[in-house]
Amino acid sequence: MSTIYFITHPDVHIDPNLPVTDWSLSDSGTRRMHTMLNLDWVKSIQRIYCSSEKKAIDGAQVLSDYLTLPFHTVHELGENDRSSTGYLPLQEFELVADQFFAQPSLSVRGWETAHAAQSRIVKAIQQIIDTESGNRSIAIISHGAVGALLLCHLHHWSIAREHDQPGNGGGNYFSFESDTLKINHNWLAIDP
Image (cartoon, rainbow, N blue to C red):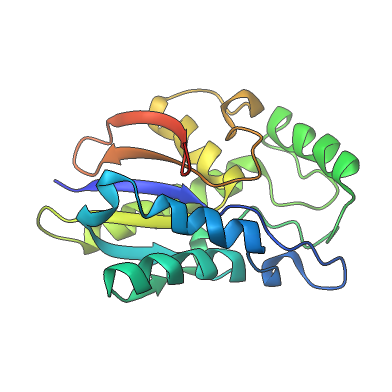
């Protein structure tokens, strides 16, 4: 049995001229990742996975450097595909994100559907579980929306935005057990 910590990247440097997948952690996001290293469970991590997006890789690098462990990128751990719209101003983004969660079978403005994103992330997590053996604690650095979709799956909840991470700029985590998929706790901040 492994404990899996699903961690969302914290604050990012928003650059409307770059694809969202190429955004990096901001200075405050990097500081918050370093603050997370003070949490008791961090020292138990024996494997690190992350999405192939820059901000998740930046977060994994902080953990990797601290634990002197390599990290492994998995493309399927990426955020819901929003490339059809690219950057959206915050207010517009929040409205579209509300629709994404409210209509999980529909593509809102060309975005990947919530059901498709949920299926992808659940499959990626299961492949990681199937790959790992023994009692290793595993960190997965990924993204808020797919974390919410995974949490809904693990709890057998309907997809709803109310299960999204707190609105603190990202940098939250939950944990669950690999053998039973039992949730140990819901969203907590990486820098309480």
